[in-house]
Image (cartoon, rainbow, N blue to C red):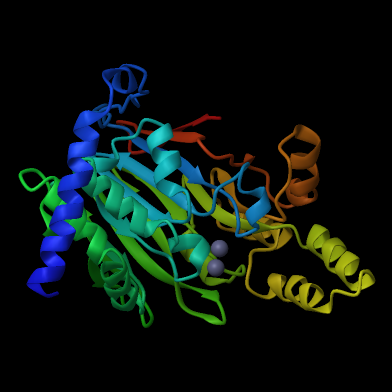
Amino acid sequence: MTSTQFSRISAIALGLSILGACLPTTFASSAVTNAIKPLPQDGKMHIYLCGTGVPVVYMQYIRKPSCLAVIADDQFLLFDAGEGAIQTISEMGLPYTRIYNVFMTHWHSDHFAGLGQVSNVSWTDGRNKPMNVYGPYGVKHVIDSLAAAYQLDTLFRSINSADTLDPTLSTPVPHLIDAIAKDQRVYKNHDITITAFEVDHAPVYPALGYQIQYKGCHVTLSGDTKVIPKELNEAQNADVFVSEALNVKQTMVLANEQKAAGNLTKYQIYQEIPNYHSDTIKLAQLAQQANVKHLVLTHLDPPYIPGQKAENAFIEGMAAYYKGPIIAAKDRDEIVLTPQADGSCQFEYRG
Ligand SMILES: [Zn+2]
Ligand SMILES: [Zn+2]
């Protein structure tokens, strides 16, 4: 950037800040502030479903794409950041300026399209430590690209708030996870341990799931995958298995509707979806075999308008194979896991 360009940008930034200072005070007095809660300090693990939907854009007013937040042990960990992640997290009152570690499952846009905003907004609103992003191959490319896309924004905002915003914190630090040959422990901090494992979401390669261990509580996250035997080990005796879920029967109805309408491109897309997502029936069978204690469904496909009838239709047939509780998650639901003295883990669902 030339010095002329820099002074022009500085002049614009100065003008904007003067304009801001000149706004009538009535604007400020009617402003809505968001109540952000502190990190809970109760010795429990809190799991917040901040995005339980899929890429179908016209249904995202009901469910935003992938986002799951874990708060425990004075740490705020985020798993995937689909579009709208930061809005949902902030609407839930979660202290997003404390997100220092993000774990990505794979590089489909419904899992990372909100990552830039998570990083940017947490930075402008006060995050004062680097944000680490752990992910499979591609993580450096995506983070470098985000840094390039946000370069001017970083510059403009740093000029506006030279005393408070450190431009070096505006974009994340990438960390490559290599979990192809064997599971990889990617994070250990006090009582939280996170292990990544490879799943099968071909043609997406690699794609990851995660295990989270916390004081005897075991949570497994499937990421996006078809049901594979490997999940038997990964979810074995899990207190909670949060898995993506695809109702194949409903998907085939949609496929045939598209075929009847002559839309063969859409027909083909619907036909292929079961090849790389988790069939609800196979998932129920696996959860039973793995002795999963609670099965929580996310990434619900096809999306539906909430209601008991629609939910029953989505999980139809699963109870014949899995005898534990099946919960179709909604955005803003919360799971609370309380470690017990005997090493077990108490489960509570707040829908
Ligand atoms: Zn995917
Ligand atoms: Zn997805």
